[in-house]
Length: 394
Ligand code: NDP
Image (cartoon, rainbow, N blue to C red; front, side, top):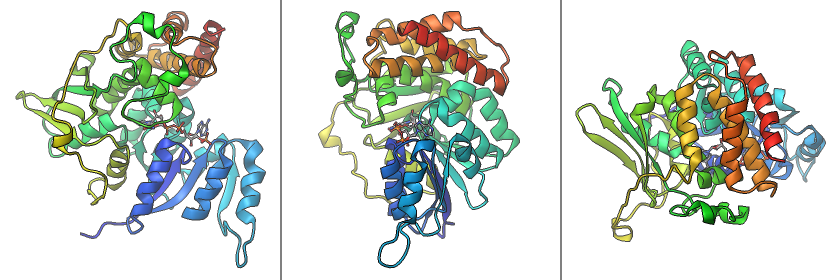
């Protein structure tokens, strides 16, 4: 089968997802080409990636790093400039602009946090397909994003492993209503621990995830179970589900990535070793599957799968995610902003691990609720919630 080559913009190319996406792209030069790369401040890695992948343009969001990137890509070796013809832009607005380039087919949204929202909206408005890693986009503004995608005829392909699993289980089943989904959770590094134990954990412990190697923010989210809280909201919008159709189940081996239950009671699960390259590749190559040399799961090495209910008393963040989803409006936007502030404070040793959930809960109680938010309301609510949350993190 001949598959048309896709031209990809990788937003957040210097991050955990971004670098793995470039490994995938590198493995299939006949299927993918890089059109644009963006980073926040990691100029060295962005330069290295630009020289290797020769995109049409790069963006370094941090303006103080612009000269470094510009100079490095115009430097000459013996024959030609290292970054011959690669345009260099800077600033957040530039990220929003480059995703609209005609030559781009698909945008991999892998910026972390709320910072990824505006560029994803811009890409949808330009009718680009979206491979979505940035779950915060749907958490903050799921209603607006899904409506915009529908209006522009844009497909959003999930990169998050759990949502990719649901998406893969749905192949050939779109006419069949989902009764329920089970999002699996590893339980993180503190599974089985109580609040007394958690009171004294430091970031060094929280940053050690048992199964996945990820960026710092999502690793802390996995330790608090907020990651699963965010994923519940992400699933609601991606698959048009009600709160009672979404259940979280702890599966410490991280081999079953999620499960769909149909109305006849049949359950379909997607399995594989925990490796983000697989869902990234599926989102980029959909509807095709490309042959890969990723390590295969061997039943002999893992004869027992286990499942347990999450401990939402100890890991309050998961319940807060469900509560924000049920409340609707801007509640999840407030939740996300407070979480970003609290995680940042924890990573900077300003607050304790348990204070993360407390900060989110207090911010949700204090920030004004808006039942039908516009884009401007989300922007304002994000700013306001960050200020409130910062006050709780002193
Ligand atoms: P990382 O922290 O590893 O990378 C984040 C990327 O975003 C970097 O390229 C960073 O640039 C860039 N970035 C950060 N802030 C800004 C900003 N203000 N403006 C522009 N660019 C910015 O994150 P991950 O790769 O772990 O996660 C990315 C997204 O994917 C998150 O939403 C996460 O929840 C989701 N995800 C991640 C998974 C994983 O395995 N890592 C799994 C499933 C989902 P720089 O390097 O220059 O700072």
